[in-house]
Image (cartoon, rainbow, N blue to C red):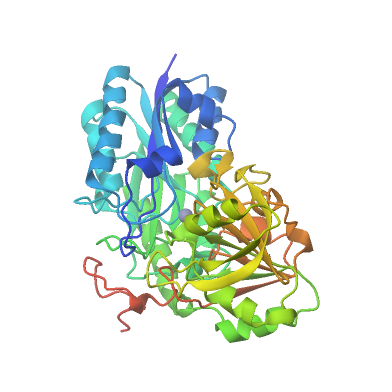
Length: 494
Ligand SMILES: [Zn+2]
């Protein structure tokens, strides 16, 4: 029986965000080891869930090490990173010998003193298992790919879709590739190319250029029998590293020249479509006008600047202020603001009581001012829900989500869901569990750039991406890059 070590450490790190990410952020989200890993992640719509099933189909035995995931946020503390990695490696050493290592990593994790956590994780694993042991990892397509990641792995398989609705399938694919290496003598040879192109979160939607034409060509390449996998990564522009930006990884069966040629071709396609990197969405006034006058709902307004899945605090007030300013024209509106202090105030007031206090805009100066919210506490809950669809963010929590205590405050036609823990809008159960029926809203604000489309795309009458200020602004010139490789488009236009 072949034994395959499984696990991973996942974080998408916004290096410009003022907060720091400690061990408690992982413990609060997902931090499981040994058998608890299998119990938590088996049958979940995650890459690890797909890998576990794929290994079972091959008759391989998964050896669960450690899986840790936290919501995107600021720089990971050195101590947290080293603690997680050392625990992972200790379990790996104790599990030896293993026939392979199958991982779920992100690709854009940065810790204090470590610009390239995934490169470091893979290198440290390679030292433990030796050169002959295959290492296969899935990556988020927002990963920033480094030379160390390629050098210390056999195959890297990135999600093809943004919203990430193919996490399970890519994890399963990783397990199939592992079986081909061990059972069929596949000799994976990878190459990658990194065009000088930096994409905002908004422009990494895989249905639009520049990623769409890259994927169309990648799918053709994957039909070539010499090719094992083609991965197109949009990268994560809000992590300031020397590797940030678009990349393509091509893995062949022992054909390095072909891998290199295909990777370069994909980089060229990205460069040809570089103009699309300048798209920033609609101005707030324009989006509000269109939404308020829409004849059918739900109209989904994407709060692009306060994109929780990109590491922002989820307390941006710019669209809330605009909706409150609209008065009676705003009817059946739902939006979420993360503000633990406001939740406590609502809980103390109680259901049915008047609510009045400053909410939101408290974490930093990027996402608007705190604003007075006056209304009635309509509902209080424990903030737990079970994912009903294929949540883009399932990687973070498996299947059960905990937003912390929640309060729904109604102010005229606007209902504000106040929660304690920022939670990206990846599933309709988030609102439904709080008594807000998404399909019946006229306007829904989603604090997201692209990921919300997975859940809200199918029910939306219209979608407007709004150029709001914030840490995930589509205007990358606002960020003080220091480590990024230059020149890079669109910051440095040739
Ligand atoms: Zn992603």
